[in-house]
Length: 199
Image 1 (spheres, rainbow, N blue to C red):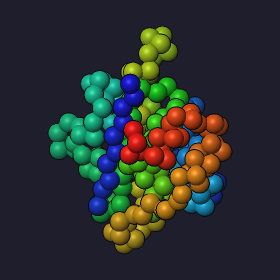
Image 2: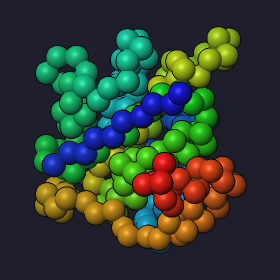
Image 3: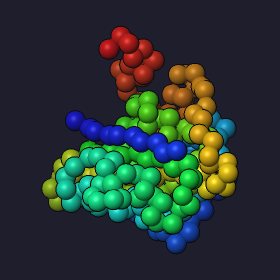
């Protein structure tokens, strides 16, 4: 079983000092391809967001626990991101997941979760940090894989004080955009996506 959680606080790919691993880079390409299909701006990378995501992914992997809360005073996602140097008051958000090796499978997990999809579609976000930790090819068990994406609107603190919006799209448009980057989705999953109250 796959698990994930989401939390929200108050162009070409650009890599800074961070060096995404292969599956992290794959996820970055997928989310930016998805946003491009929907006429949203691509997300640039930011080393502070990568540090926040990496720290929390490693902590969750070490504890074997999927949660937005961490140890001590930096337990919440917002506080962890601000502690890495993102200015206090900036609009930030976080997706977390467990149970998938690949960036593609994690994208699909979040696509079929309304709260996580909302984070990926937030038109206010400008930057992202991505981390995948705990995966062991030797154990052949993706249960130990933990993913974190941290988002932020780094355009200005003033604009960040306005809560972000998730753009409005039809189910068909969302599915078409997702399939353009990950390939065909499971037909039963698509049916559930379109008619959640029937399941």
